[in-house]
Amino acid sequence: MAKKYKILRLVLGDQLNIKHSWFKKAAPDTLHVLMEVKTETNYVWHHIQKACAFFAAMENFAQLLNSKGFETLYLKLDDPKNKQNFSDNLSHFIQMFGITEFHYQLPDEYRLDQELNKFCGGLHIANHAFDTEHFYTGRSELADFFSGKKKLLMESFYRAMRLKHHILLDDGHDPLGGKWNFDEENRKKLPKNHKPTPTLLFDNDVSRQYDSIKDAEIKTIGHIDPKHLLWPINREQSLKLLRYFCENCLHLFGTFQDTMHAEEWSLYHSRLSFSLNTKLISPVEVVSSAIEYWKENKKSITMNQIEGFIRQILGWREYMRGIYWMKMPAFEKMNFFDHNRKLPKWYWTGKTDMNCLSHSINQSLEYAYAHHIQRLMITGNFALLAGIHPDEVDFWYLGIYIDAIQWVEITNTRGMSQYADGGITGSKPYTATANYIHKMSNYCDNCKYDRNEKVGENSCPFNSLYWDFHDRNRSKLGKNHRLAMVYRIWDKMDANLRSEVLKRADFVLKNLDHL
Image 1 (tube, helix red, strand yellow):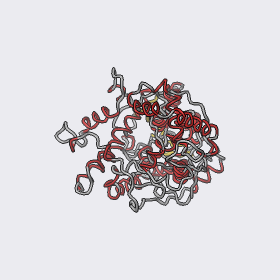
Image 2 (tube, one colour):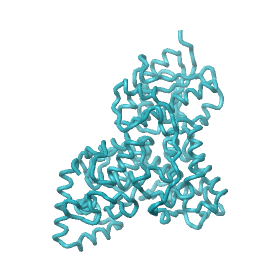
Image 3 (cartoon, helix red, strand yellow):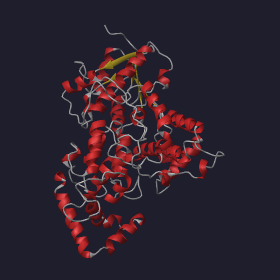
Image 4 (cartoon, one colour):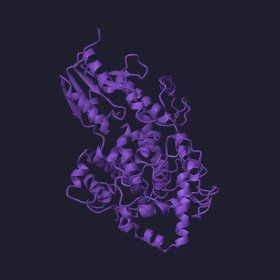
């Protein structure tokens, strides 16, 4: 007969926070349950590294709880008793263990929030939801902050967060360095012959998880060496990566945070997003550690480096989460431009003659990672200019990146990248020609396509698509003051050239799979 417990606590795969108040003291009447289920592996085609990393991190967390005396049940994907979804498994465990009280932490994904709300609505035992104790802000804090305001400006929210949490302030009210934002200093291209700091990689054996996923015939994408997963899968490794970033990358993070390079995939980025999004470490820990290290090394770490890093976490990450809970579920249906094209097939293979896209996609398939400018201004920029349906773009982004969980993915992708929200997360679409790509990378070197040409069979597709996008969406974008110069340049362009540009764009759009 199974042992009886009073309380069952569900721990989701992105709730691996050993610092949570649940884990201050073990109780023999409380069972903690973690599950590998197909409803989580099958809603998109996940990168194989992402699937393995999540399962490995979850299993490590279960073992950590066990080692600290917490009653823990870890349900593996291949367990014959696994019903492959949370609700059915929970119902089984509640009956099996004689549970009289169910606890869970508030999910970060809307679909899981709805599922657990529905599940609890059908229970005949007590149930309680707890905060995850992870973020700087509550779910509704951003909505409350912008109540009655027309624009949801991230900058004003970010400044308020700096003030509220007393971060990078001079006298309690003014920003250190005399400015709130040093972004203008953070747009440098990597100099020739510059050698970034070597990347810290881990060496985790996830063969058990890999075999389980393959045996279950789960559709995945990307590449992996299952004996040598490079991503952190526990708190110790996550803290080591944080220390490594502070000691080796922070001094040039801001300066080169927007740069791209064909021979570099990590540069000076922290790569902490998987650890953060699984809650192995907290944003408070990351921000505090970075600021403490900066204070000790101000001679070598300038203000733009530390401010740029803090803004991504305290500002952008919290802002996007707030937008998510403010606008869901309507947000995931938004399609401002009524885009409806399919994603080109080479997004899944990287087999395209466009160097920038080939490199960014192949890097993503190899490492389950690309930094924010690769995602925004290469893969995202092209999808927007080509008129790809936001559902297609969301599906790809949510699957291919190790840090992609819907609350952070969809707001950045459907919102900022695709402007499908019509301007909630951005004041204009983030579009660019090959000129920007050349300015911020070496991707254009030796590319089949000519970055300087708008027309002709060897002209860079970004150039004609850029003008075609703005021309066909003039009714929706023409009054946007930030695009006034774009339309002035277009209107002054020779009429014959404009016609040829649109003709070239039409050809590109009809041949997306063959670029």
